[in-house]
Length: 305
Image (cartoon, rainbow, N blue to C red; front, side, top):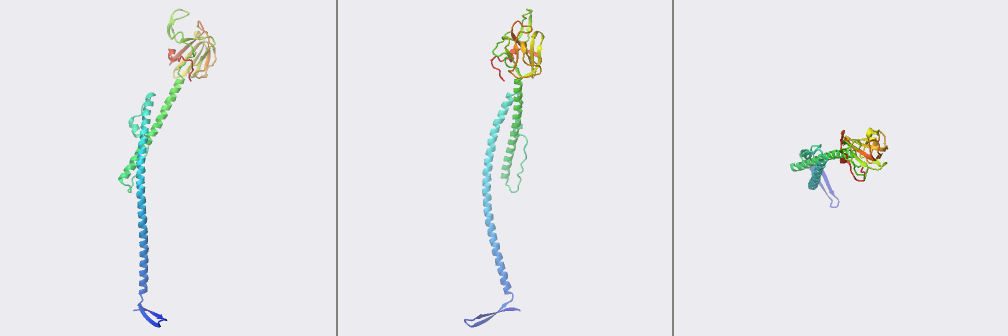
């Protein structure tokens, strides 16, 4: 068997030794060193990974507790938002009732409109955490839908209010001669010319000749000129079925097709046509039917626009 011969020499002691070692010994030593080195490195890596894993686990636990606290806070915010929205829903009912609009059904409010489905399914999430996330998502989803529904409802309410305001602007509602009181009323009376009982289809408002006559609502002039017994007259179509007539005028200050605003001066008082004295004969027609104008006159001195 082959061997490795080693010669050891000591000059100080003047001796020589010869050693015979198996040839495999150096390989064995080298292999052992390599194994020890590898084991040491593996142990170091294991300790490092273990330490990192513990650190990461601690961080994840802290993050989990933080997320739980935030989720709980978010749940409280959703509850507060729901309470505020309940106030808005109650207000929506009142507004729609006041404006004579159909109310939104409670089942529609309870679910809202639109939204998306939740997708928090993850095998790494606990069932408790997943349920909590699903509940928060569903609550926010309904809340967003209810906010959208309230927004659409507000739009409908605004359009209704605008329409009402527009209708009011076109509804006769003021005194065409501010400060003047009504004279001969609407209804049957003795005709001043024939002395017979005849229907008086308007109201007479006395005023000196030349007194300014105001339009009682927004509209468009559909007639100006001489109208038999009414003398010089102006007729205004206000829309929504309303038409007003101003008769016995001295002069007319508007022309056919003019767009008129409430409170605009349209003529002056006179005594043209079948009139015994200076006054304004004022009529209100609703859907073609002549009605009592006193129901559409504000007897204050102001013109409201």
